[in-house]
Amino acid sequence: MDVMPHTKKGQGLAALPTYVQIFVVAGIFLGVGALILGEFIANITDAQAIAATQNASSGLVELASFLPIIGLVIAAVILLSIVLSIRARG
Image (cartoon, rainbow, N blue to C red):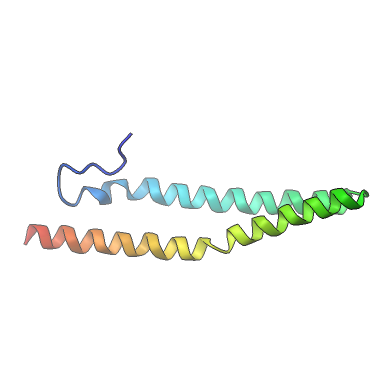
């Protein structure tokens, strides 16, 4: 499935709602995952299981720390799409 059709200039903005939905869903999944792992850590007694869950939790937090950068890239792409679509009309 081609999300960004390349047949007409400026059509990249038509896929904008899809990108925003993917970004929001990723943030929700990361937040819920962090909550679930936090509950697991609180209820586990085995030391190896606690270490594994803490490693998974820290990996999830590290992945979530990239969301602002991804959002900045998405915003830059949107701005470039708007500028290029205006320039193509003019």
